[in-house]
Image (cartoon, rainbow, N blue to C red; front, top):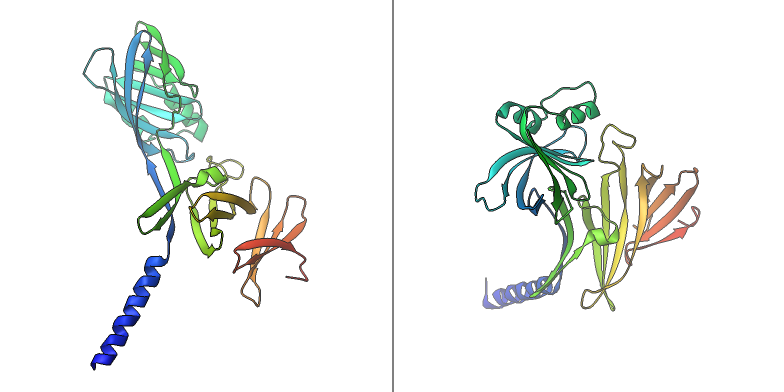
Length: 296
């Protein structure tokens, strides 16, 4: 290859590099944490609990077993406990015999119904200590001879936590937006497209998540889905946002999508009364507007 040809290739590579550098990087980042440290009081004694998620129940996403340990008063010794996080809060046990604790950790008890199994785990016997805490962070501690009130300084009992953020990066500039602030779930979010405009940035996202955490209940197998459009200024500060709900088992709503001859998306959405509305999503503006079916 002659010198001129190499120069042209080098120039093209430089231009492509410049374009790629100038483009912001926009994506959804999602992760979860499964361990938490809690502080509180058992009667007049300071209490510290370190808890970890062990296993999720077979029927409910918000019910899971816990293992960990506590430290009480001036003691530096960690005492092992096992327990359950459910819709009523926590129940934690200290067992001298590990068999009941293993049954709870692995959800090994096979009750005839799911909620009967949860009641069984809450009523285990043979423990030497039992901690019961409600979702207000208050409860009671028991051993074989005594009781004492419990209070947690942080009443959020969710040891399992999920996070979903919109991550924006451009050179040395970075920012993350918590997507739950836009009524989006903590998992199942996705960037569909984005556009740079004079005012800043438009980002189109989608979400999809199960309707309810209890898989065996009404809408347990259903989904909630939709679109979210964010407008940010040149400093990536929020200007406004809007949501279009597409499918919702909870609201008895369904949708269907087709593509127009111009490459835009047409969404027909049926509400709980059986009425249809049509929305046209413009691929240039990443915005949707209501239209008549004949106009779409």
